[in-house]
Length: 435
Image (cartoon, rainbow, N blue to C red; front, side, top):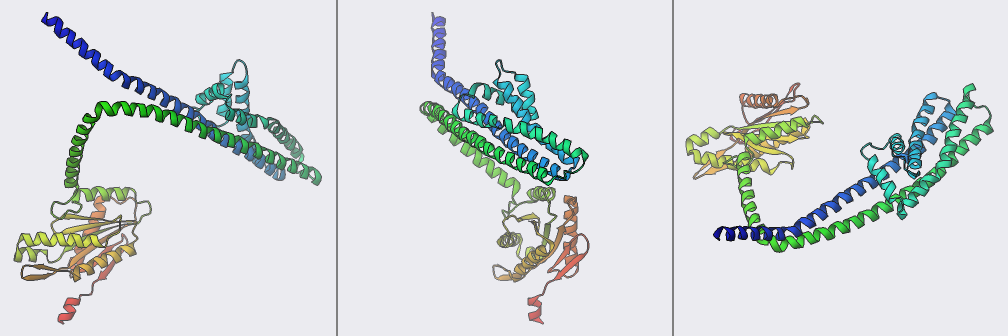
């Protein structure tokens, strides 16, 4: 008795679940079917629009190259004419095959391939022609397409006639030459008119289909949304709260992983990743790297303690970010060493930026309790003009330039542009005032 009751309860629960989810399943299946059908139709229409553009361009090219051949007699121009006219001829054969009863699918496929259409688009183009050619816009497009058949035939005959007449050399008869050239111009004008109307019909049809299919998709999507809102509101809110908390935690962890714990600017790990990315994409060859080492940091630590040193590092980090460009990156590499990445920055601009940073530091005074400290920096600049420069080489060059700046008396900029050193020696207003 108890087992039968438990089984019955499970069956009722299962049927309840089926009843609850069946509307969703049906709407989802309907939505997927309509969406798939919409994509197929739009893809096929897009293929026809692209094919029409190639068809029109190839006809114009055929007239153009045949006209060049008429006046120059160059065989290469005639070969280009044949290559161009093969495209509309292939499309013409495809249309004839699709208009037959029964439809000759294989011939249509070969013709569309000759017409320059992508092989993946051809099944959809054949399907659209077979089942939608009765629609108004498609009928109009096909009429304009078919109207060029006599002109295409005439152009083909013209090509052979001109080739035959040019076998014995250039055409000497001016009237004959003028007649052939005028007829080619007239064919081009007629082709252009039909091509424009063909394109207009396809464009109007494409927009009509897009609007219709969009409305159908919106209606079915709205039905699905209305069903889901009533049944899943509480679940969505709970999940959203959980995802918000998880996202916030991920952002916090990601920030900690890529930023310096003390100053809040980019850390060494993220700096190296960004620098490698800039090296990989340094197409213009204008990438500069600045390394800055504080000259008096040890004095601050020794005389006022590490808390004062930490405060100084934070203030220097803020100072370095004040005058940077939007794409520049400021990072703390460790200790009292900072780095700046300057994308798309020619050497001259990099030198000016480095000198401005040096002056800003020189004018900056760090105050701690009842003491004041002068702050200067030794700056090394590496101008990366070689696209094959590695991260290690760029860092080595900037570090070597920074070391030379310290060797030459500190409070200065030393630049390594890969060929020769450019040294910018800073004026020292404080020392000058004492003197």
